Image 1 (cartoon, helix red, strand yellow):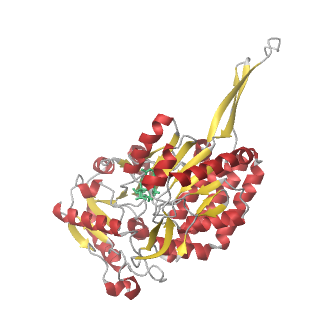
Image 2: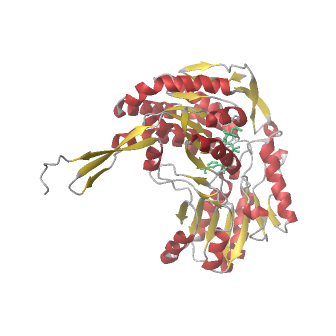
Length: 490
Ligand code: NDP
């Protein structure tokens, strides 16, 4: 059984405690590797290494930092198949998805920020005829980077790449239930000759390793992606230490379909936004709203397509939907399906675990749930307001723009929304009024790494992506130079 190691000071090391946790394959429900059950002593070693590495790395010319990060991107691409398989086994997601989305995006994250840093600029302000101000942007020091299990390498590298590109050093923690690709990334960083201590990866549970990172006085910057409840805990522990914190949290995203939308485009994309990665994407469009005149027709076709999705062994090439991440997530999803029944919902398809025949003998102990479509729920029901994070969507009809804006904004979340219409003025009007960090018009998850990414309300604080990330990981310092008194007044 593979024994995962921490990556500290350029070395693969055992946890101080010598304790390990079982790492399960969610498709079989069985342990297949061991992950360090790290604690604050491991975090302390990682902080020491990051602190030692900071002076040299922060002064390394941008072009040299860029070259190392580009080598990491190349090595991720060269190891695409190995990494995709590891992500598939660790998360239960279809191998096809890991190959086409997770791992290519991890390489893009490094490539994007490795080159962005070469073009990063800072401001200067001429103050009348008296002075010139210029702004220095310096790396902030040691960054704490904490990521969740749904898109493990994709989200972890989305933080590591900008932190390192801007000259910070880092202590990173992947979710302890999906540590494998972070472990493989450690090996890649060694092969790419990333200097020791620049990146340290400490494995273990949130309450131990995560909490030790967020409260460590030498870690002044925290970038966190995960659940809203955990985000609140992190904000509580970081605030008294005046840390700079970015929180990317949960979502309950509306997918709004007007009757004039082109159904042949809406249908396949809505299936993806509902069920890709088993619905475990913060951006999943889990609340579908359809204009009344198109409602019945849409429900019929959507349910028929959803019922045809193949739930099965994630390693098989024709699998559309793999396993949920864990027994706990499986139980949570099934409880929400029961709640939907109690709240008066009609289960139009799914609502049950996948049967053993469809998933096959190898996967009979795995955590599979059929794609589930629910109608007839009140907009204010719990199922329509709370994040489920599974292959479950609700469909609700709406009368007009006014009503659907109220529906869309009727949750505590505000991460992303999709809007389908051929009426451009209407699209602009709604984009303006819907409270979420991203609005996709006639698309979903069309990503450009330059744009600001993040949520409003309980979906988070701060933005990632492009210049937002470069600014987040740097400290602006303004320098004001007064012109000499005898300078010409112009
Ligand atoms: P969690 O909040 O449970 O965990 C996220 C990370 O935080 C994990 O590494 C976890 O460790 C760690 N952690 C847990 N407790 C603490 C703590 N007290 N202090 C510091 N770190 C801690 O989220 P999930 O892993 O369950 O991920 C699912 C959630 O992530 C969903 O709500 C989803 O919407 C959100 N998400 C948001 C995205 C966005 O961009 N807005 C993108 C993707 C997901 P461990 O796993 O070891 O407990």
